[in-house]
Structures are given as C-alpha cells and as structure tokens.
Image (cartoon, rainbow, N blue to C red):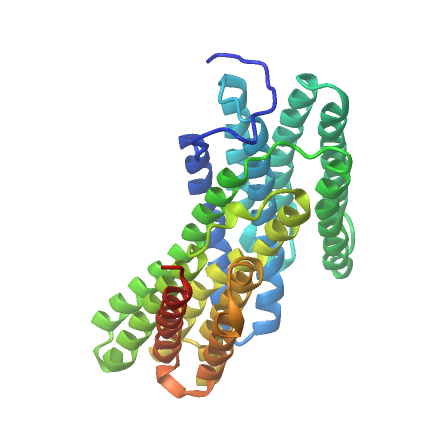
Length: 383
C-alpha cells in the first residue's frame, strides 16, 4: 500500500516469515561483510594478527549492529508501505557507503566514510522509530521515543569520533559501542517491543547462512588455486575439502535446535541477540582463514604454518562454542550431549598443531561432531 499507519504487529502472528525486502537488505550487507573479511585476510597474511583481529572486530561491529537494529525494528513494526520501503532504501545506501569506508577504517584508522554511511543508516532508522511513536500511545510510545533519542545521542558521539586524536579513536569507539548496546536495554525497560520470536530466529539464521557463505567462496578460491598451482595441488584440495566440511557442520549444528521456543522475553532475547556478534564474526572469519591458508600454501603469505592453521581453527572453534553457548546447551540432555560441542571446539583448536593438513583434520572433527550429536539425540529421543 502507498501508506498505512505504523502500528505494532502481533507477537502471535501466524506464518511470520522474512519478507523479500528483508532478504534484499541482507544481500546488501554481503558487500560489507566481504570487505571486512578481505581486510582481515590481508592483515593475517602479512603477519599482523593482533592489528587484524582488532580492526576486523571494530568494522564488523558496525555491520552487525546496523543489521540487528533494522531486524528487530522490522519484526515489530514492518508495515511494508511506500514510506517504509523508502526508509529501508536509505539504510541500504548507508550500508554501501559504510562498506566503501571499511578499508580506510581498517588500514588507516580513518573512519570518515564509514561514519558517514553509519549516520545515513541511523538517520533513517530514527525516522522509523519516530513514525512508530506517532502510531503508538502510552508505554509503547515512550519506548519508541527512547529508541529515537538514544540513536540521536549515539550518532553525535560517532561524529565526534572523527575529531579526536587517532590514539583515542579506538578507546572512544569502545565507549560508543557500549552506549549503543545500552539503548535497547534502556528503551525496553517498562515495555517490550512486540518482536516475533520465530521471525527473529529465522532472520538470524539467514544472516548466519550469509557469513558461512564466505567460507564456501573461500573454498572455491582454494579449488581454483589448486587448478592454477599444480605444485601445491596436494595441499590445496585438502584445504578446500576441510573448509567445506567445517561450514557444512557449522550450518548443521546451528540449525539443529528450535531456538524460537526459548525466546519468550527480552531476558533471553537480548543476550542471545548480542552474543551473535561473535557467531557472525567468527563465521565470516572462517572464510577469511581459508583464504589465508591458501595464500600460505602457494607461498604468498608471510606467516608460519602454525599461524595459517590458526586462522581457520580459532574462528571455527569459536563459532562452535558460541553456538553451543547460545543455542545447543538449552536443548541437550545429559553430560554426553552437553560436552560434545565444547570438546569438539577444543579438538579443532588442537588441530592447529597438525601441520599442512590441519584444515582437513578440523573438518573431519566437525563432521564427527555432527555424527555423534545425531547419534546421541536419536538414542535419547522418546519412542
């Protein structure tokens, strides 16, 4: 419709699924995720893991937080009329500007373009919250106005980031990130926005598929490099196979439980939603690690075999552990089921010291985790 009043959607709405507009919005974030991953690959391949991981975390935070804010707002107030679509278009434009500034923010600590893109996104979202406030009353209106005010205050801080000395930028970044995380906590005190649990879980699942897709792309690069670099064929194909096994096991484990049944209030939803920063970041970093392993094998990465292996095993282990912490442990019965994924994450870390076949061994461990988990779940299931 051309226009419809923005009112809250029902939390019990049947067949609530991601809209084509939401899917298109996610697609635009692929660019930003790929840019962050590319800079991480470059830093790791040049032997700068500390700088690379810190820079990657900072730029990925902006990607994740912008996506998360849009997703939860849409779950509660998506009316899909013309003004809503135009506001989403503005946010998409902001995403693309932010992605264009990732390399400068990562390499030079110059956040100018990234902040401009971020402000574009947040101005559009602030307008959405003000529109929601206009259609609400009482505590719901107050919550929407708190969101709008919090967004404006934080954006003033992000603009101020551009004018502080370079040495202070990352410290101020941490302060502003903490402030951003507090906005929903403060705004929802006294009134919970009507997000839809099944819809939220689906949206997070779709973004998980996007970040895991980075690993599929990296495995493809490994195969292509194997074709071009015949001397390294015996080492590149195991990397490609191991990467594919890791990402397939990661997908399987992530989607193995009906998480929407647990998200009944903000008490469960906020820690779960915030914890996905590490799920998404580590999932995308697996792909970056695969590319680093490939570059090491063909001799273009100036790092040791151990460092190349760790570029894959560390994010893979972190992904599995975070999925267990946020998802799986709530649905496991008995110590055997509870310990399967944490022990698997530990075993994948141990693969770091297994030489040039570390990625393949990590993939086999991840595959064994799935097999063991399915077996244990089958045995404990009621007849």
